[in-house]
Image 1 (tube, rainbow, N blue to C red):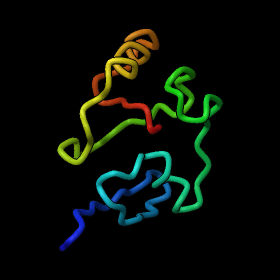
Image 2: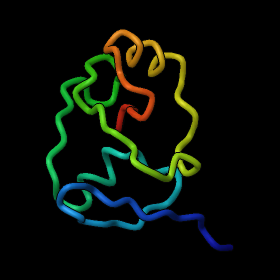
Image 3: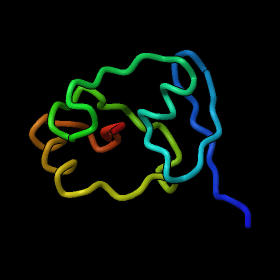
Image 4: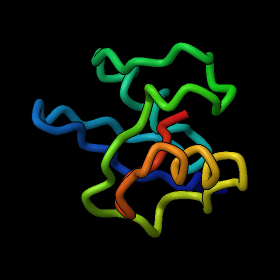
Length: 84
């Protein structure tokens, strides 16, 4: 059985990593060796892991209510998501 994957490219470095669809963006960023702020350890409460998704929205899972609420509180732009 083939596992669904996608390529994540981090800008401005251009580093890429192929990940399975269940991988969080923060995990993908760490796989290519880049730092990404995160003080809540994935609890979706700090917003430090906010990223801008340039393309490939179809590969992201829909945001949970907690993420939507925090992004709204942070006045995030529509193309921003939490990497955790």
